[in-house]
Image (cartoon, rainbow over all chains, first blue to last red):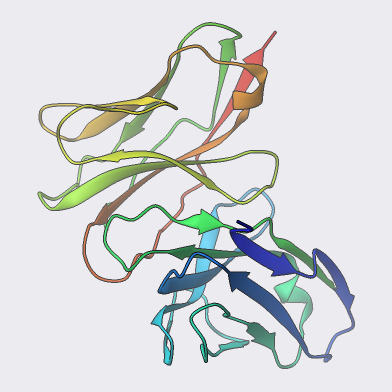
Length: 113
Length: 111
């Protein structure tokens, strides 16, 4: 059981480049989300999804797009990377809503030059 | 969701109990208290949650005061592997399962 898998683990981009951060889970979880964590700070919610075909914005959605075509996958897209998006990105999943504990991936460390 | 206040850092001797406090004075009746921890920049790990009764699992105990305005996470026998940032989060147990993290308490377990 792999849990929540994020790829890549590290990435360096130039300003203006685009890329997709991948997140996959094999637990049949309906809820998935993306967070970013800047140095010395807690995690902030970017986007989330309560099921395939349904996405919504979190606390800091600007500059990011998401889609949820399958239950297993929830990719995060940066259309035009900016230095302010340098951060560590975490994907999480859980059974539908409520009190269910969230399972986090190991993160993607992204640097924008 | 109610805001929480935690001390920025704490130390604990290895083998002793670690007691991590959290203040949530504006908590409402339908909000639960959750604890997660983050070990060395790994993804956060769920520890425990509760509403008003004390809770215990294989990792920790959660003590919530009678007025629910504060709580304490107890690691009964801290080990070096418990060194981490501990986050106390308050949220309703309904709707999307979104978590709002503060800056947490950095617990250092000392040999």
